Length: 75
Image 1 (cartoon, rainbow, N blue to C red):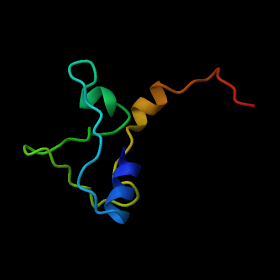
Image 2: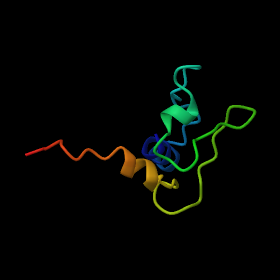
Image 3: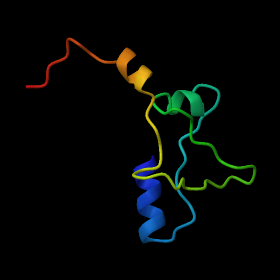
């Protein structure tokens, strides 16, 4: 999601983007569970890109550790 938003903001100036949300099953918390905080729209439906480096989001390292597969192999 963030890669798409950064690309659109940096190249096309487009103001519309498909935003994955289908409550109640697909909530921001469920969609963004790997992030420290979910991506949220403001009260008017706009998203402001963060000014942090890279994609502008922080991964939740504890969740990554909990969901790490120790048996999957990709040879």
